[in-house]
Length: 353
Ligand SMILES: [Ca+2]
Image (cartoon, rainbow, N blue to C red):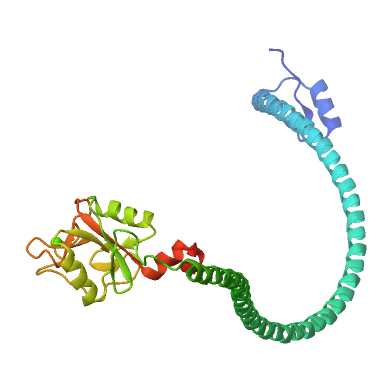
């Protein structure tokens, strides 16, 4: 290592001029050299330390530089990202600002409309109050009118019922009047015809007389003609046979009639009595209900099956017995002398009145 000159400040306490004189004019001195070597060692150490420090500083600076570079890159990215966000935010801000302006216009327009609407509302509220008063007044009138209407409707219903009842009575009365008028007209006509028939009958009696008051072969009792048949048949056959002769099966309503038919013969014969319409209720063929019967002992019996009546029972040939209608018996027809004579002169119309 080359020996370095002793630094002036470090080796001497003399002034610079003195030192230059000592260094140049004086020879090497041992004490002084030792101090210089110490000085150089210290200086080398210092240089070393400084170098280490510099190296450390450089290393730290390099590390910090790398970190700084990384951070710079990150910061740059953040900056770019922030720039992008800023641009987007700026666009949003502009868009929001535009919307805000439009909204502000709408708000102003809406406020104007609100003022107009408020005025309309006030006007309408005034009209509503007046209308409500009118409604209440009208409702009161309506209630009174409704009560009057209900009362009137009740009266109308009663009047309608009375009218309907009166109309029904009038219709019935009108029908009766018409029926009576028709009957009166028919009666007048029949009366004229009857007078004509009676005139013819009287002329016939005067001119020809009446040779017989009963048909030939018939027997007379108390102005009634009786025919005791020789034929036999069911009750309905017997009834049809008598009707065909313009007569009826015998209708026995007196003890004298009963005695008369008892004396004729002891055969069982159908008479005009049945309970065909209602079991147990006996009626004659002319519709009259039985008043007095001449039943044999224990008769009528077997109700519900024996519905037709004969003169002549099993143990009493003269009294009455109810029998099965399809049983075969003889029968008795009868006709009054008047009816017989009238029919002889064609007076059926008179007889049917
Ligand atoms: Ca019987």
